[in-house]
Image (cartoon, rainbow, N blue to C red; front, side):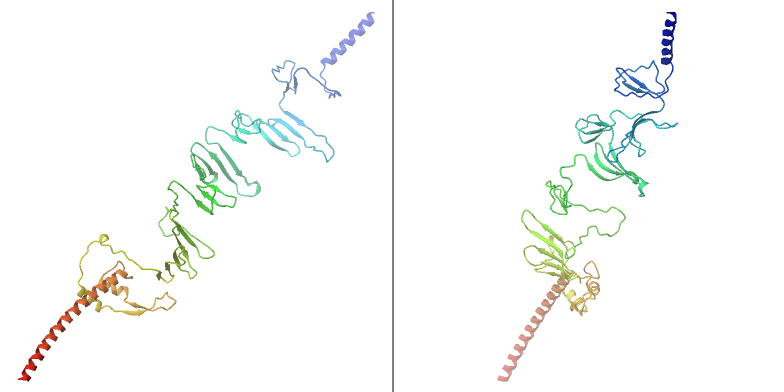
Amino acid sequence: MPTKQRTVRLSVLAAALMLATPAFADQVINTDLAVQGSACVGFDCSSSTQFGYDTIRLSENNLRIRFHDTSSSSAFPSADWELRANDTTNGGANYFGIVDIDSGTVPFRVQFGAPNDSVVISSSGAIGVGTRNPLADLHVTTADSPFIRLEQDSTGGWSPRSWDIAANETSFFVRDVQSGLNIPFRIRAGAPRNAMTIESNGYVGLGTGVPSAALHVFRSDGNASVLVEEAGEEGARDLLTLANNGPAGVLLEDTSTGAAWRLTTLDDDGLGLDATGNGSNEVVFHPNGEVTILGVLNQGSNRDNKEAIVPVDSSDILARLEGLEISEWSYIFDGSGARHVGPMAQDFHRVFGLGSSPTGISSIDSAGVALAAIQALVERNRNLESRVQELSERLDALGSTDHSLLCE
């Protein structure tokens, strides 16, 4: 009996020593394992671990959970993945990440200290950034000017560039980060419906959702106007260019009456002004400076529009006109060789002092000089007729006297 009892005690002691001695060999469990408690894995786990609500806890200085896919057939996926908490190097980053082991990349990372609701996916699949209640496919919320940055770095060999798409209480805008945060595009809060529309054919509508031209500006509030303004250094410049492979024109239409005028370039490089529907140009501006009109030219001469009105001495006008040289000539820039008659503008200006320029003659001035000279000629002719009448009467009187003498 004593021997048997001692054997039992030694067996129990040996079993106790085996349980107390750390087991360094890997353990393989060839059946299902169910643990009705919490589990701690890692060098820093202890028998006094307080799990709280933790079901599984990893406790050591390098925390990883790796998914090692042992698929050997090329037809099956075999990529390995890892859940990683923090870098292993001194001074490394604090983060939680999903690691693509085979590619050596971290496609998903959550930095330590990220605020609440940094990324939320709702039950409908909507993604919230900064909000736990996303109301759109992508819903971004911050306290001031939420924005999305589109950044091209230099890894592809192209110059780096960054753009921000942002919005706040005043506007929606696109910001050029590298150009001093300039904002080349902005939509103010409260902009009206269809403020800008780009159709599938490329037509752009401003104020209309159905543009019928490459650029269609529409308003119904009396403000359908276009302003082209250059506020830089003083100088002449083209502010509007209309180019066409053929005659180019502008149509001016009164939709209340249907009346319309078209200003268009002509095949002979002239410029025509046409009241549409008449079949011809009422006014044509020729490249040689000539102007052809279909009707009558009426120049403004309303007394109510004039000042410093003084009478002229028609005799003086006629006298000065007699000294004005009249020539026949052709314009240098007129290739047709057409001939004209008239004075030189410099001579006309010197003799009469009329007009605002010594290199041009206003038709109203030349007509005025002609009318004054005609009046002077009429007066001179009247005086001559009176003189002729007087001489005729005297001759008649002399003839009667001579006849009487002959009869005696």
